[in-house]
Length: 187
Image (tube, rainbow, N blue to C red; front, top):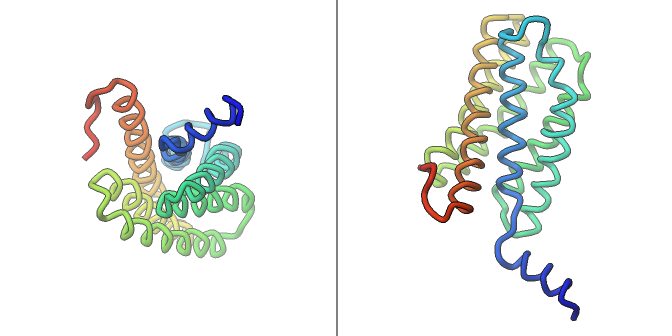
């Protein structure tokens, strides 16, 4: 076996996974979606997040999820591939009516609830990512059904908080691993 092949095998066996990539993609997508939902950036709305949602939230999360599943990480693999599919579908559904959009968000909130329950043993940060995502999806669904702008903005702020939690989780894992000491607490 060549040295290159051995190196590739060793890289896989030492725990090289896509968890941090997935949490970064989830975090940045949720931050963009959330902040654009709040209306704090004048002249930009949630629709402006569609391209980012497709490429970063959809494609990157889906690939990271497949990588995790291949590595035996059932929870993050399921979470990332499912949420990757959500973001890809959301970005493609641009002109959906309010009832279709509300139902879409409500059904995906069920996924968020499943992920929240499954992450319960993963510590406070894991629960925060998926719990806040679930609340955001429920609020966004109700806002979509009833055209409640204030509720949509609240859902946006909660999505942004979920994005910050996901981003912090990845940043903490990356910096704690590379600095050789606890730099950013996780639990």
